[in-house]
Length: 458
Ligand SMILES: [Zn+2]
Figure 1 (cartoon, protein in one colour):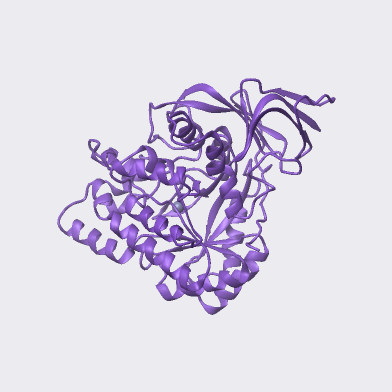
Figure 2 (cartoon, rainbow, N blue to C red):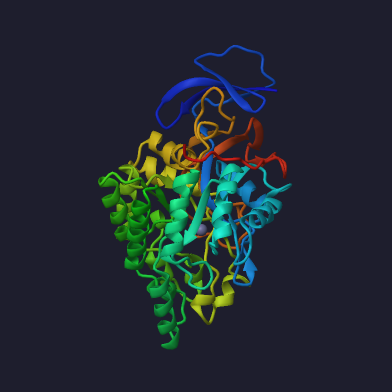
């Protein structure tokens, strides 16, 4: 099967040129200015960008939370991802207390098998680091699960103490894995939550008011310090606060391998959304919470100057009806999370490139290349080059779409950006050479996505 993408503008993290891209089966084989070969399928990309498929390294599909589960499974979630121009995801498998990492991994592999329409990998969430589990980390790295997420929040559920975190960090120094950190001071937050509830402060906005920016900054600083003492890199997930970004910037200025991602919700939404009438603020209940509007400019600056290396989504949708509603009388019972897997590329293109905050190359780097490099997917994914997987997006920089729960494909009954117009959208999406989206239609197949065995740090 030969596919020829003709006359587009090929954009990678470093280049931009008019060219044709030839794909054989699952792989990019040739890039040229006027490729003249017989192809089974020709895609006209004139006036369009030809981009490496988006990589979203932070999703939670089919994830249990507080007696319910996230509204998208691996089928609906990856279909929505593809519509938005994302062709690889890295989701999170959760090790519950007493469970082996292997069992946890198998559980999540079963959730994805036969369902995912694009490729997927897993980070492993460790909640219980016994000596035996610590040993298992090496085996997981060998099996392509090369990153581990730890929590400094949610005491009694997910949180690890500093000693355990330090042991896990040291282990990755030997096995080539990477630690991803949820950096919020869980002890402080729990006290603030209990105090608010005791005072009858139950509305959604108290979710944000009990999770101060300084609690994120303190944990970010501590996480980086622990990694510095272990002499290993660290990756901070879903960084939201300007105060936390300062900690990352300071560490990077000292030459440390501290990496961090932010998410579109922190770039486009703010604390003000919690003040929406009635229970509407619950739409935005996520951790960390939305911050003061002033933080948005700081985060964009961090993205532009490489203090932040990736934009991922933390896609974790819960419907307002029956799910978010669980917390109608108590904000601490509102399932944490919001939808975003489908809207990331268009939002960051519109608010980043079109608004002049980041370059087109930087857009590709933040949404694909850099996460691919950090998480062991590059150069198989994250660029368009001979030998790379043909995960390719034909992106129309001039098409305007209106974000709405009615027209998007995530299985959730609201959208945090409802009614927002964004310009720049994926037209055609290929996953390893197979069309997944064409002319606004899903043409892929459940189960066509494969588990990606990721490389560790060498
Ligand atoms: Zn998350």
